[in-house]
Length: 170
Picture 1 (cartoon, helix red, strand yellow):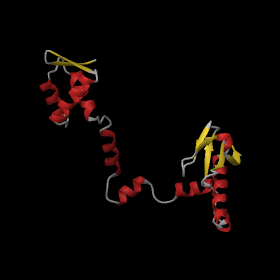
Picture 2: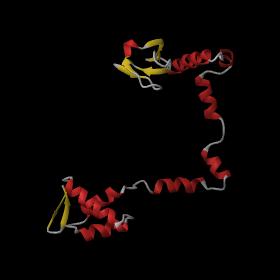
Picture 3: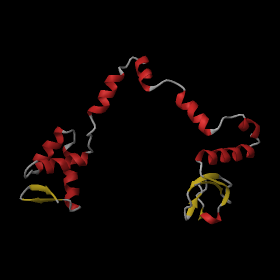
Picture 4: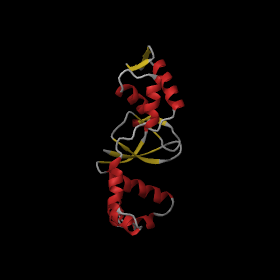
């Protein structure tokens, strides 16, 4: 269920899905119980709610005639979807091989954050020392200074321990 509601403070109009306990005006931030909001229309169709809201906004600006000439939201969405060119055509016309782009996008699906790399350095090595962890992280593009700071943070947070110079994740 979708409802077009209004704000009594700034007269903004927006669409609310369902019946939340409270709603907040997207313009001024006024929060009120949903029951206190003025509902202009309630419908099961989101596009219909959009149409009503747009019609009300057009009427406020004395643009009702111009709004009446427009297609519905659903038809406009279809027109946009079928207008222009697709990505492959765009790339090919720009001199870029679409197949190479697709292959490049599939290659690196395992990109990791610096912290994940430091954690992997501890997890994947048996009894790693700080030097081992720094070396592993450096090979994966993480600076030594970041790695040392990350190790300290992991120890302080209780997520890693260091005993006899060797680290392990907890």
